[in-house]
Length: 502
Image 1 (cartoon, one colour):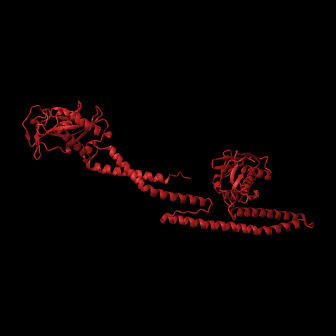
Image 2: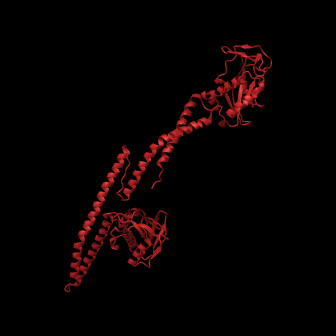
Image 3: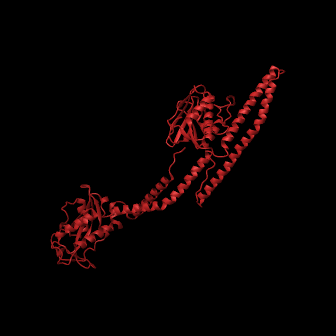
């Protein structure tokens, strides 16, 4: 049988695949518009978050002296988990002292107005300077020297003149058209050792929370439907498996009105019809077998009368003996048919009660005269739930098969406790059975050519009767070839509480 994968797991895998595919589609659509890499990410609308933070920093610095700039930058750094710095044309204006990597310093120069960086000579106010900061001024650099991510954007430092720091000289101010007040061009830098732990560009904690919420909502939405669907399919699978094993009494109660509900009704109808067919077949076999017993008995009586006659020649006596063997074969066949039909056509369920399986097996062994060949090995609690007569018939048929087909080797009967059930194993030392024939051994009238033939007396009903008897007791039968050779038959029966061995 092929390996099975749970339907729940398949649906969960599809859900995860769906979410990943959705993320991939968003990723590729985004990058098709803005390109690939960190630089395009910061230049995209996602990077506008950096400008928003720069505006907030500018607002907090408004009117403050430069001595208080570091305090503001520390507060924002704790919020976004980065280190903030401010640079202008004179160099570093605020933040912890740092030496900028060359690549970062070059990008800072590009954000300042032409001629502003490094020019320490005050100039008159410039009218019509660069426009206010916008998204095109953002950049991100991953420095190979210290392994840090550097994110920069323009920072307009504004003030009312009197409140602006003396460092921000009036000659370093710009008066762009439409801008309400002069501003001092500067660059806000943010450095992070791990950009994934920073919320400056993308709040990954928020994104993760949103993704988790989507996943939880998706599971909460789909789980009841999938649970109901998988539960109904599981019931259908179990019912069809039991029908395949010959249990036609199974019935489904799904309560669904969709296609699965119709399928459950169809399975119920199928089980009912199969039960009728099989029951009718067994009843027919039982009736025929019962009716054949009378004429066969009359034939046997007639043969005995003929054989007792002294006027028969030796040749005629031999012919009568041949006929007697055929009649005996017919008698055996009819007896087997009758036993098979009775095992499957009990008018009511067998009376289930604790059965001492050790005592039952020992009784059968003594009845068959196999005390010298059978080795018994039982647990301390040999009690199972079942019908003693049916279980003894099943054990008797298996032991007869061992004697008939396994030669003179030993027969081992052992019982192992398995928690809620006990396992009775009967193994012989014969040649075993071909692997392809094992699943069919419990079918009526099935006889493997290599091991069963009419010359050995088998009619193919012995193991079918065994299966019917054990299943009537609520157990199961399995057959296989033992590792050391020989056929191994296992009964799995429901265990009952510990009782003293009588």
